[in-house]
Image 1: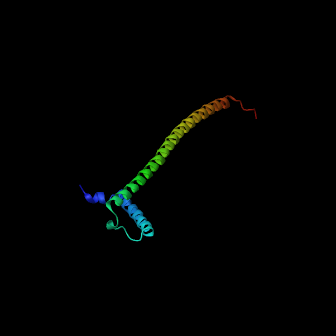
Image 2: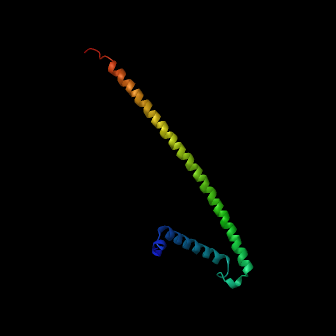
Image 3: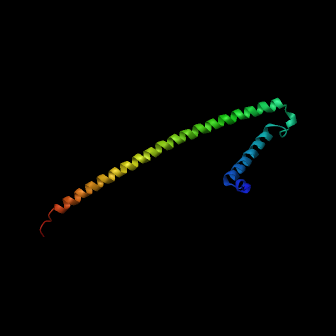
Length: 117
């Protein structure tokens, strides 16, 4: 198994880049909010755990919100797909009607007599 294939995969590369951008933004937010960078010795284990759990709760809420949006979009996509199918069927029916009318018109015109010159 080639580890490079995994490390250089476009999806993982994009994830690393996006994560780096978000991490940078979070560090800037932290710098504006706290007087010093995160120092493990400035927090008790209980404080770190509580803060981590608060962030985890937020993460789950964001995940559920994203799931809700994706579910709604999937339902819309299903509706649009059905509408497209129905419209294609309607177009086919209209084409058949036009073809039948065209045949009738051609039959009618072929039986008409031209006026004498």
